[in-house]
Image (cartoon, rainbow, N blue to C red; front, side, top):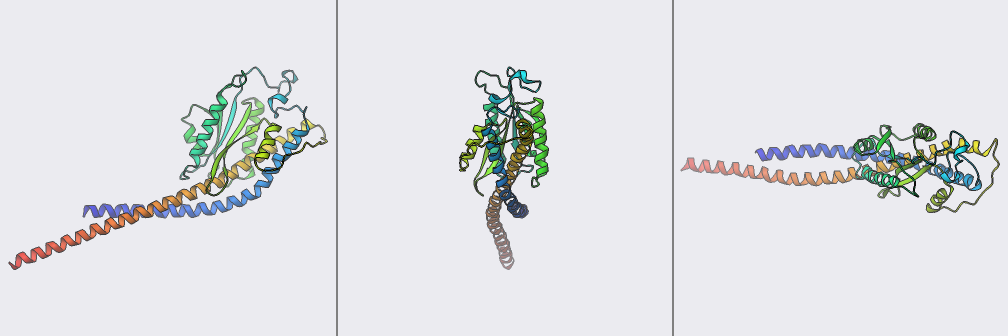
Length: 316
């Protein structure tokens, strides 16, 4: 009877878990539909921003700005805002993770990509010194993981698993640009999850700052779009002022696109994980039901045997 009682308790626990996994599957499915609709609306905006910045950079070869790559920045004598080329360079890595778990390998893939990127950014290049990268985390799960890593966590943002909006992207972009101009780091990279399909999620890395026309052109060509031709623009009041005003909008748009795509990928990963968990729970429940029936039948057989044996003894 003790074995039968244990089986019943395990069946009850698995049944309750199955209810939770099915409910989370339905919730993730609903959130995924909403996230994919927003992603489809965001992708043209996301793509157009890259094309616009590529067109501006391709047509201006002599423009000086702190937001441009090192080879196009002004020399050290240009003013107090110019970077010190003799100082060791430091990078910042933005890691987009989730605020909740139970999403399969979604967060683990981002962790591996971030660690690999940080190791690459720590190696000196061209004889120059490089400091250990700092992390800017988005999501509570990433903070729990990297708090035990050797890398310094500069800031952590959490949006409670809600669908990101432009205000969230503006908060992050304002912080990044202010720290970049202050000199806290010299370049900014972001690691997020790209949703190729409902079953194919891949972590991608992208350099946000400083801007480089060649890298932007390569990203556009890799995505299957046509190569951008060089265009000439007329800027008022000056090309530097217009460019410096557009860069914050560009950074905000890039971050918003990464947040929305990561959100959709998170819901897809959680939906798949909950579906697999539900299937495993149903298999376990079926095996336990079989064991329960066998134990119950054995108990009944034993009771019948005892009754028959007792009746025969009394008759004798």
